[in-house]
Every structure is written in C-alpha cells, then in structure tokens.
Image 1 (cartoon, helix red, strand yellow):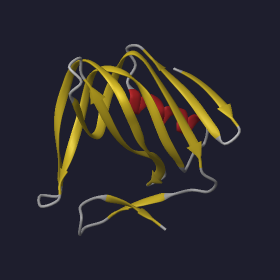
Image 2 (spheres, rainbow, N blue to C red; image 1 turned 30 degrees about the vertical axis):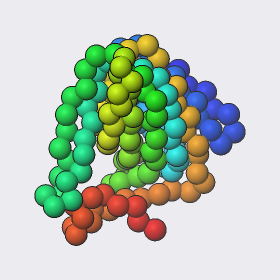
Image 3 (cartoon, helix red, strand yellow; image 1 turned 60 degrees about the vertical axis):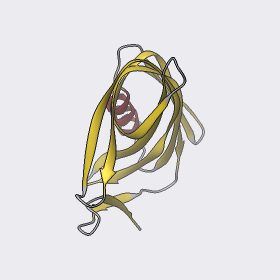
Image 4 (cartoon, rainbow, N blue to C red; image 1 turned 135 degrees about the horizontal axis):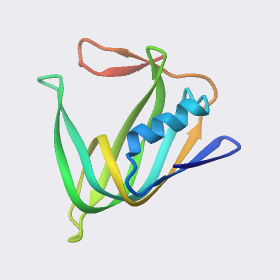
Length: 139
C-alpha cells in the first residue's frame, strides 16, 4: 500500500494481493481521519459482498471469485466506539460485463486499487440502532 496526502484528500494505492478494507482502515487510522468520503476503482479476484435483509436485520454475504473490474467503490469513513468505521459498497464487473454489487466486507486486489478519501473536517460517529439493526450515523 502506498499513501499520499494532497490537501483535504488522501490518495491510497492498494497493491496486488493486498486486502482493500483492512488497508483502507489502516490508512485512515494512520492519518487520523475521523470523517470522509471514499471513491475508488481497480481490480479484484476475491471479494465478499453482502445484502442487508431488513426483515431479519442481518447481512447475507456471498463470495465473488475470478477476475473482476472494480467499476465503483464508494462509501464513507466515520468512527464507532473509538475505532475507524468504514461503510463501503462495491460494483464488480466480470469478463462478460455482468455486474454484481453490494456491501463490501472484503476484497483482495488482483492488479491495483486506487482510492481517494475526501477528508471531512470534524468527526462522524455511529451508534447501533435497534429498530433497523444497523450502525447509523449519529449527529
């Protein structure tokens, strides 16, 4: 992983064989980012994505294997219980152009992944919401 800061933006390059979520979380922790927006592109050959079942209040996850372009990686950075909390969604396109997407749990980079974190002044916090079962932004 390589990181560079440009004003209110952190640019992160995650390299082949590295996992996206853990590396992005580490970058945010190392640079003291408590709030931000995430945008990225790249490639992955091993990802776990999920869908939130509102009735059961839980995520259903499935593995996506094989070469895929990351056509969109988007989300935000906040804090929960004193730790960096990433809420990320991803769109993955296979060789045939078919796209799958959902909540990103993990993804291993197969070539490169380029991410920009737009730093927001201040801190965003999250708290578990019993009604939805989600960790919601708290203002």
